[in-house]
Length: 133
Figure: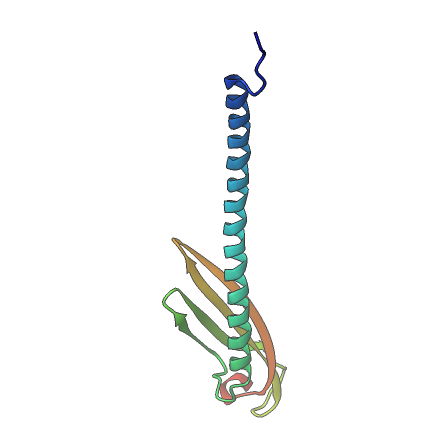
């Protein structure tokens, strides 16, 4: 009898099983990478929005000396800002220079979880009447 060359059924089943395990592993890694890329994209967007909002707050001459307020960027993200004195010099008089602390938290929803990106800055301002006393 002539011997036939080729793969046996058992060899084909083993090769298919090995390939299946390899493909599942690759797809799992790909899913994890895509999820991480989404998180990095969200954090990067929050950092850009936070820097932009902080620049807007710091350049606003009508910014209250001591207050807290908030706003929204869209339905799934927003911000909370707070201003107040950082250091009040001893014997401060109205019109003297002092440091004002500006705190900003940008938040966003990703599914059911809420993420936050905090940012702080300081600026020199003239002491208002109530802070100087």
